[in-house]
Amino acid sequence: MNAGVLGLGRALPEKILTNSDLEKMVDTSDEWIRTRTGIRERRIADDQTDTSDLAYQSAVEALKNANITAEEVDLILVATVTPDQPFPSVACMLQERLGAKKAAAMDLSAACAGFMYGMITAQQFIKTNAYKYVLVVGVEKLSKITDWDDRNTAVLFGDGAGAAVMGPVSEGRGILSFELGADGSGGKHLYQDENIVMNGREVFKFAVRQMGESCINVLEKAGLSKEDVDFLIPHQANIRIMEAARQRLDLPVEKMSMTVEKYGNTSASSIPIAMVEELEAGKIKDDDLIVMVGFGGGLTWGAIALRWGR
Ligand code: UT7
Image (cartoon, rainbow, N blue to C red; front, side):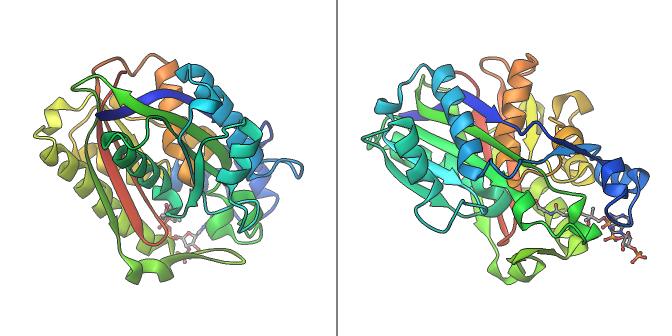
């Protein structure tokens, strides 16, 4: 069985935090943030909205778009580093709230590469016929672990959720190849110690190298080349990192997703949110070859070559 995406959903808090708002909070400027990261604004969830609330909203939309009921879901995987609490998992909270009675449920921790890890884990169950429908959610309320006095990190992150219902798709469609990786020796460059601590330059160097390499690797594994790529959806961390991946694939600007401007870096949710937006904008069509690639704390990375369509 080929595993593919049957339906997508997203949730974004209403509150917008602009670069000029941040100028009043830390020693920074709109100009610095825009030129160094590409970010203009990001969404911040209110005190009443926790990670599971965002996850729930995106999951309901994904199930509706997939035309699948919650009772049909076999497994719920939630990629997050900002769960409501260590346990019960956000996945279990979702299971209850959705009424997904038969679903197994667990959270998965791979930081910004979490959605890639989630999709690929789901694929294994679907491919082997063990499960039919897997709900994969990437969700983050990073604002609750952001040090709002640290200009190195406060300007980068945002809150949001994206969900995909995955299941069997027709031959030739769905996930064609993947790559997952980790390098625990780089854990010291990006971690949580109450709040997010980051060595931006080290993460930047790793990301530029890894994103490009992983894209090339998944294409090779699928027996495809750069020319076959219709659309690139990179983790939305920093426009300069994403540009490096785009150039490595020799893709024109209009073939890369760019939501970082509006939402900042929303970690595990950035790739599914971008997927929803590109689909809505009509940029992704059936049988298009999509390359998705993420990297994050751990260090972790993951990429997927996917032929769009059910
Ligand atoms: O999902 C994974 C999460 N992490 C990432 O994706 C982060 C990857 N790294 C990056 O995106 C970039 O490294 C940053 C955007 C974080 C920083 O950009 P950079 O071009 O690597 O800047 P830098 O760290 O080399 O800092 C340049 C200067 C420094 O000043 P000095 O030491 O040269 O005087 C910083 O203190 O910019 C300063 N700076 C700022 N200035 C104004 C750092 N943050 C800010 C800020 N506003 N917000």
